Length: 77
Image (cartoon, rainbow, N blue to C red; front, top):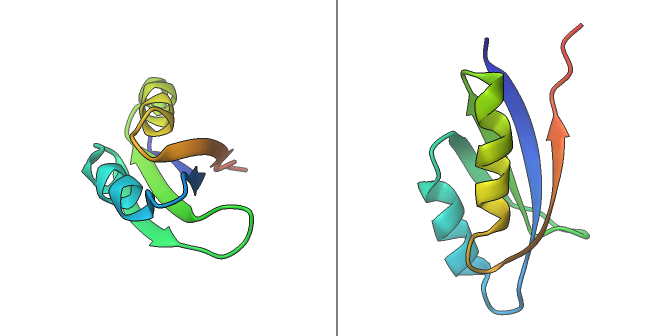
């Protein structure tokens, strides 16, 4: 079962490029793009096993240059 989530990321001042590069290296991250607003970057994440989502999201939050994340998990009907 494929599980998808959007991770909204706020980066530290002056660390945007470093954070984006690190986000792109994480297994499960499909796409990373800049946004305007309270957050600086959105990372689209897809994992095959729902048990892998939590560890993947936690890994993103610990990356260099990442200050804060908020995760929006896809809900299937």
